[in-house]
Image 1 (tube, helix red, strand yellow):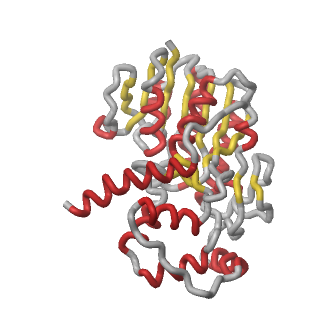
Image 2: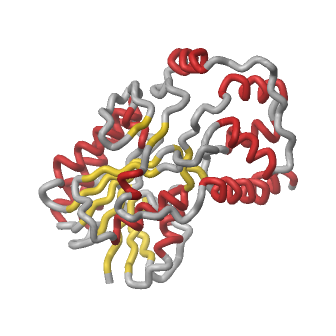
Length: 317
């Protein structure tokens, strides 16, 4: 039986990954958690281990030799420097214990600001924000400290959405309860700006694929996105969500804002990506024969159904 050591298992992506791993009878899953109460899973093959990424000794006790270790953790309530330290602690612990494979789930935003419209794993990273810089530093720390000791793979998801996640919540609430005028203005301004969304089930499936593939993936980075879907843009997502939720699509004004205006605004407010049409290609991952289990449209429908059932239902109580 193979041991999977998972950090960040109490989070959004982690919970979906655990559901997927419940279908794997030949694995034992250990989940690192700061509090026992954080862990809602009680499957027979899931063990909760109390520890902290900032506590090196607890990491050494948590990890197991020859295990597959998956790092989903990012402490949003801590400084970027703390997260970099946590990454270094994990690297040292993996080396000391002798894990077989570390899969680090990073973020596609490490690319930062670039003139390229189609982003690949070869795109030079130019992180702008502290978050982007920290994410890239963690990648570098893991690769430099472990690349010659154990297998290391990096996964870079785009904006993750799905049942239980925060992605799309703000947009959907505005469509349901916000000002009609503001929604019309946003449609005029954003138009078909790419949203770079990826369904959480596809991210979990990509992690599982990297766990069990026999392809050579050491020291490799992979983007996972749903950007091949033409509907992955603001206007189409608004149209699809309003239809799914039984709302009327806000009627746009006759004025269509030039994309250059949106680019300027994005730069002024400090966004790294000022290109409304940027897409992230996951061709490298797909060329390994990875197949996403859920289409972008199906993912949106699942999210809308969950939103109606959970968010709207709770607001009506």
